[in-house]
Image 1 (cartoon, rainbow, N blue to C red):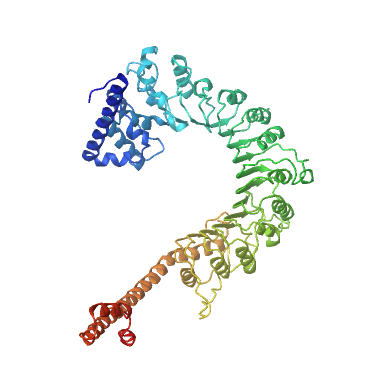
Image 2 (cartoon, rainbow, N blue to C red):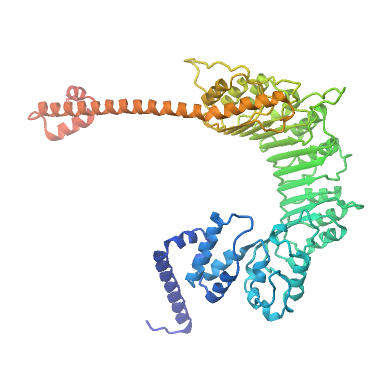
Length: 628
């Protein structure tokens, strides 16, 4: 059709190009179905983009190795990348989108270096000649595609010094940043002191950054300017080591006070000023603090429910390596938070039962009841082993953590205080009734001098009241196996969610076969029993004997499962055959009665009435005769 204007001509030309691209895509999908399985998982923009650099893609794929150093050589991720590379080499249509995917994540700098002419670098990655601006022409076409860059000691050979290599690239790069569109940066050197090239990698587009570990004053000097150079940061992780002769809390807090859009933060050594700044951020959802320098004089009476709301969006809070006084000072500031998970780790000095009771009582007073899902109170230290002539500290009982029963929607409870936990069967019953939504339960045991009071009957309480319980760590006395209740008025207890049970040590046991039979009858899906908990003592001979007995339980448990499953299979087979035979007999009898009934009514009733009566009397022909 003739076009009257240039705009209409351009419109029809664009539509013709789109139609041609669509037809080429259909042809390619028909010829290469395996490649198109990868395309279905790509974003929609990749499926509709037309490539203009097919030759550049060929050269890039031939010189660069697109696989992560942390993945296995023949893993599924590497296979997908190889398929994507073959796809880009085959079709010009998908070349450019494939490059975006292949270059989006880089965990090595050598893919960028390989884009330069071979005459620039030697085999040990040292310069053969000065780098010219033209040497960057090919690399500049690909570095803007990088969105996530990760750098660690595993990213370099032993003969390469990262600081010198990055400094060489920084001096010769004809651009202010190596990756102009970088969104995420991970620079982690735990055992080295390599300094990240700040102006080189800190692009204004960064939103997620992980840096560490800071060990020197020079490295800490990077932090204050980081908030200015990267104003869009939303996820920040700072790993900081001990710096001799300096308190890093001030400089780290200065960096934190410059963050206005952060949503997730992991940091150590915060002062009160930085804490107040974080409490006013409207988007902060995850906060992980280690050794915070919080003013412990901010006692709970200073706060009230009518106080200005703080941490209004905080959902996950972790506090490590701090004192009980600091915890009690921080808890009231979280009263307006929709908190879902709380973790208190490595409290120093190790709290006794009274301090733990105060913390749990404060949680009940200040925390929301309906939102909290996970509680984790753990300590690496274990004080249950008393010294020579020293009395053992009292264990945590149900009276201590009963305030936690206030949170009825808990799904994960991990209580591993240094003094251990002492519970009986009735305590486990109260616990199971208070937390019916439990999925993970971990209770640390006491020392070998205190035999457990809980028995296998505690497992019955958990199976009856906690239908979603999947993992369990609980020490029990299995020397006596409770009898199986055979009552017509009570349903059998079957729990299909529990997958793993960490018994701990010392767990007394007398008959491993009977225990395996008991567990198999209640937990058909239990496939693992572990005794290597944090309470196991390798020097205790009694613990070795118990460990061997529980290993026998773990060996016999799959056999018991197979025997029960085999019996269930044959029961289902016999019931299914009997039911099938009964249905065939009933259907045959009904057809015979239907034919006899229609024959008896033939000639005296119209066909319409016969069909009508047969529908009404489908189950009983005699009822149809009476109705007529």
